[in-house]
Image (cartoon, rainbow, N blue to C red; front, side, top):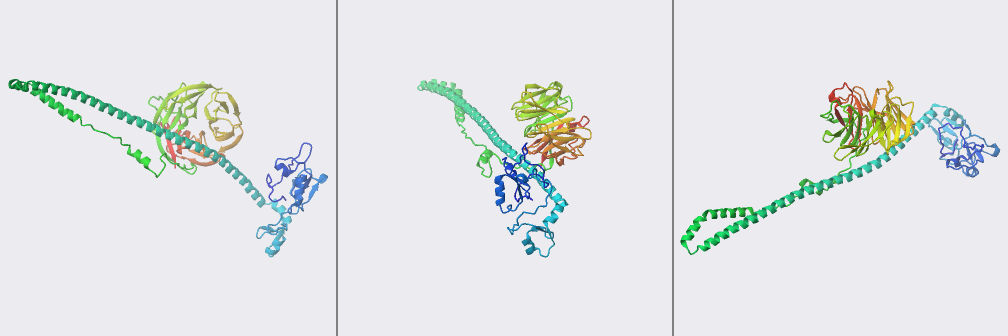
Amino acid sequence: MEVSGRKHKGSFKDSAEISSAEDGEVFCQPCSSDGDRMVAKGYCENCNEYLCATCLKVHRKQAMSRNHKVLEGGNMLKARMSSVTLNSCSELCVRHTNEIVKFYCSAHDVVGCGDCIVLDHKLCKVDRIQDISMNYFHGAEHQELQQKVDQFLKNIEQVNRQIQTNDKNIQQTYIKAVNDVKSFKKEILEYLNKAEADMLAVLNKRKRSDEKLMSDLKEHEKTTRGNIQELHEKLQLQLNQANELFVAAKETKERVTRIGDSIKQLQQDCKYKQYVFVCCKHVKDMFKSQSHSILGELLILKDIAEAEPQFDSEIGIKASDDTEDCKIFACALISFNRIILADLSNKCLKIVDIENGNIAEKYKLKSGPWGLAVITKNRIAVTLPDEQKIQFLTLTQCDKITESNTIKVKGACTRIACQENKIMVLYRDHVVILNMDGEEIKAISNSYMEFLVDIALDSGYFYVSNRVLRRSCVFKFDLEGNLIATYNDKDLSDVRGLCVTRDGKLLVCNWEYGGNIYMISPECQKIKAVLKQNVRVRRPYCISFCDETNKLFVFNNESKLDPKLKNVLNIFQFK
């Protein structure tokens, strides 16, 4: 029996492993657990453990172990006891600390020392632990306990992985939220700068108009004043001559009328209309409001595992100059309101404005694109298998696409994924990791990789969908090519597109008529099926998920499918 409180690696059944050097020396096990290699000087039969001189000295002083049987020198066993022993129990009673636990009461399912039995279990059937422990060791109760503890270890490992995922998500969520706040502030400033420029333009236009009016008024006033002065002087010359005055007055009658009209017009035009700036009411009310943050608030998104997708909207994705029905082989989100599509049949890329529900940009390619990945917000990579190359493209703020550099690849790679300056390209039966310059870092092949369809990356791991008749499944590998987990499902008839959410869940397209989408855990365990038998989902081929809005984007793909189902982007909101 081991000393209470000692940590012991392994299961209930002790192993025959010993800490020994190549020359046969045995080392102290307590010291080895701390990383020290001290030669053992003794062996405790009760604890089934080797001890160095220092640990042996302490062992003999402690109350709980001073009576243990210790073998020293040449009497030491050269290997730990691998069988179950029936040595006397050395555990001390928690109530009577000077007594050793020796008995078991089956009626109360408790163990105790002799004092416990005399005081509390005089009328009970009591067994000596030494007499029943072997049966317990080989019994169902012990096996059940072992299974429970093993399951606990698995559960705690899952919790540990979830904590690590949460820690990563906390950092990513914080960084994104900070960037979103700053981005929104920038948008507000740009809006205010534009609004200010527009308002100043109006003011300047009004000022120029008023200044021209004043200039015209001054010129008009000057001309009218000259006419009045001329008339006045003429009348003054004829002031003492009645006949000439009469004639002059009659000859200038029409002129006087015109001068009078001019003065009236001048008087009317001189009524200047002043103006003042009045700020926009809803903007002013927003800044006055104290009930909430002006910029926004933190919205807690519901875990999609606990939510159900509901149809939100559909967007037509067939352009007016498309010659074929759309065959969307890949899609990727650029932002929460922009998604880029690889249309194989029309040999083009399309940027869809999710908010306005239209095609914002279409870019023609020389051959059909099979896969695409968003590297940064303004840079994407597209696989062109017919040309055996990866084409990089640049996106402008106005949704314009321009070609950048290209990478030649060996053979026809189909799908692509990017993460941390690495590119992973998918071939039929293997995966190749490249750097951004196209140099091969590692090629990963495995007997499980038979007919690969899609690939998705998730922080040090990658998933591939493997489509083999009657054996469609999803594999999870590490970046060294070691198989970590497998997702098999009897209902998974033809696996296609994959998509990893921020919290590590994997969405899997089951490409069958009326097919659904499966949600699985990072351990490749099925969580649930979503969009089962949905009228808008008939042949789900590729998908994207927006972690910011909890929206799912689904594309159907099949030659005989109703055009209304394959020329649209279906959007579902998890609620």
